[in-house]
Length: 164
Image 1 (cartoon, rainbow, N blue to C red):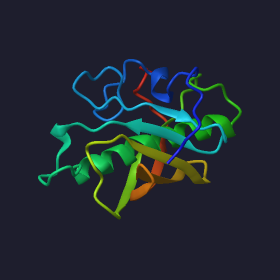
Image 2 (cartoon, rainbow, N blue to C red):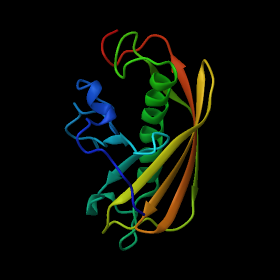
Image 3 (tube, helix red, strand yellow):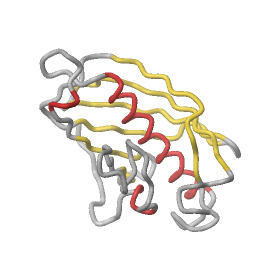
Image 4 (cartoon, rainbow, N blue to C red):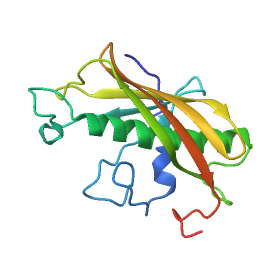
């Protein structure tokens, strides 16, 4: 699956360099440290992730399903944050900060996700409301769709990500 990213722009997660989330926190040296970017279409947010042998599900060349869910979760939350900044016409990362937590996560596993190639996540907000965002996310290994996720992202007022 191809994607068109502006590699000159910082990753969405880079706005909060002290964040320690296991999946997406830049300040968590033991975490996944995923990086999400707006796609050129301005509607989708994409992330590339290279799994390693430690992400094995116990079968040869198969990624652990919990990791697939974690990738969908974190990437979808950042998609909700970025889309809300954009919809409000607010500079990305500016105060008052916009933050979300996961209200629900649903994952459909469609095929084994391999470990020996990068995966591409593509997410977009399907509905945006004052207190929540619904996000659809797909996981691709090459041209193969391996998982789909749906996240209900709940907006939080007391954002802890920047000490706000």
